[in-house]
Length: 362
Image 1 (cartoon, rainbow, N blue to C red):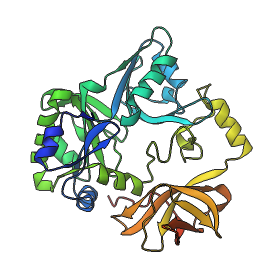
Image 2 (cartoon, rainbow, N blue to C red; image 1 turned 60 degrees about the vertical axis):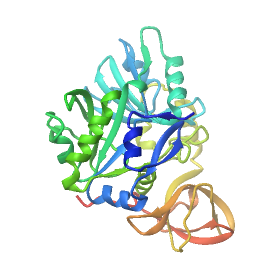
Image 3 (tube, rainbow, N blue to C red; image 1 turned 135 degrees about the vertical axis):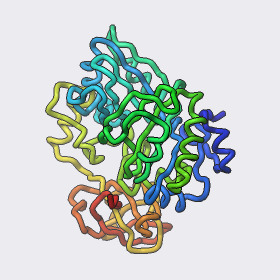
């Protein structure tokens, strides 16, 4: 049976359409995907992301341990700063992408993908040295994302923490409705906003208060459907689509968080070899020139020859055109190149375009 977040009853009150995702019962939509997407882009959207996992890593050697575990340079972040990074297998494939929050030099709070929580926890735990504690604290938190141009105004009503002082990818440990909270200026939508972590049972009160305070700004609860179209418009990767054990961060366009010049980390040797041999594929953004919508698994062709695969695809609510993220052979990945996506046995012309597909206007 699928697990339920602390906000399950709130979703039912809002007539959310529930589906199973990553082992959880989650709302895929409420008022409708396009409406929720537009609300987040133009006003403010509220997302239950409590299905995401949290792992706490503590100890004198925690920093050195994490720096040898992930691709980014954890030594570069300060107390109160967050960092996006990837964990790799020895062959360079992706275990997961994640966000590390530095509470202190010996204390780190990591957010991982819902479907990978147990796997990631075991991976981190099994690689940890003596003197470093690794704890799966996922059951202790309700995670809520407040996203959109009015996110700060809405959330500020619930906290004394001066939100304007929190820069992008920084966070504060403060209070939300008087309860201890981690308040991070992060998100998965391309809009300004925050992801807050409150005690599990404090979730419903925080959710309701955010909906109440956000009414004058046109806030709406948003489901996983809108979360997916929002992230696709930004070309943000999703595990099981753009990244997995068979795909590496360099070809996935995550070279910017893969620091091959830092000391050894798991997968570094394989990634260096891949880079030196020449990367075979590139992850590109495709815009449809037809009416058909590209979807994950559809084949990308050039002159009738298969040259790639779609990893994510949707009708973009912002652009009102079909868009896709796809792996294609590197020589064919030039901006403006014309490729076909095979949709129900029909070749639909697409163009490689600059990403993100959507750029926020503020």
